Length: 503
Image (cartoon, rainbow, N blue to C red):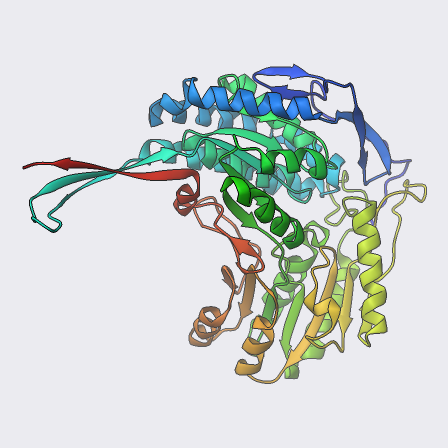
């Protein structure tokens, strides 16, 4: 159902002190004065004018980060000293949780309920977790006796920060995906330049305010806003940048890898997905339907792990689809500033147009539009906002474009199967390999299927569950490297071996 408010939707002022770049510990406008409005998908109106960083601004940020690494205190601090500041970032993230949540809702349409309950606190958890990791980045000593003389030697193996890290983050989970990169990078002793998505910069500005208040030394964190084609490309090609950590589309990720090759940068790529969520006939039906619903429609489908291909055993196919359609009819849709709403608008006009095109493609390819497939407007919107109904396709095959291409919106493709082997074959028949799900009461079957999934994550009888301590990333065209967990520190440090001849 569509939630209603009694009057015209009025957007509150973004909870940031100023819309500026943050370079070398200073707030500043773009050097050429250029700005770009950020548009709220709730009402299609401008909510702030954001600086468009010039080439000189980006160069200044790189110089600041480089100097802060080469000459500044951050990489020379002990892990306990960095831990203290990162714990302060965590505390402030919790203190400003409502502000971070409001930034997300205003900027990309995420339901304020989820922005407060999940995203804002996830940011605090990430900085707390990696604050604890900072003193743990240590080495080991081994006694070896290599040929030709086999005399004993001590080898001390240490981990050192990489240098300057460029974090390029997407529009769909702006604050959380920034924290997954910035927190471990800082814990390891690196300095950071953050380039948020051009259409969702508000939470990045709020995070910069938090870093400043927490006492992060000048130049350790720098924020440059602007287009990926301009700002992102300069960061990717610059020889003073040691690592690119990117989350976004596979196409853009491939371009970043190509453009970073000349300077041999370390890269982490968290890219697209077309995840299969498998429901067997022996599953707990209510749980499976609820997980299938939130697996695809959470964040309006704008999440890279979205279970956008629902594989259902044929004997329960109709019952599962009916259950999903019933779920859609009861969920609150509308203005995401309303705490009762769980499903708001898409992030921008481009995403809306993309979703609408794929709905047409699905119908042209012969799939049945079982539910949704149209725009809607909540009360008070005056016919504005990028709202699109949760959409379900049935009578689909895995070869259709709606089953193979990432839509990144609220479009679910339901595909029947008859056997376990067929479900595995369909699930793995995709270029992507980010996530997967299995629903069954048979734990042996669940583990067989989970182990057969060509994906970096598999949820059993749940979906879209994350924790700062659990690594996350993809196979195949979904990228490489990992976010979260202690494993990510491999991607933010060098390993050095120091040999000592004892003879």
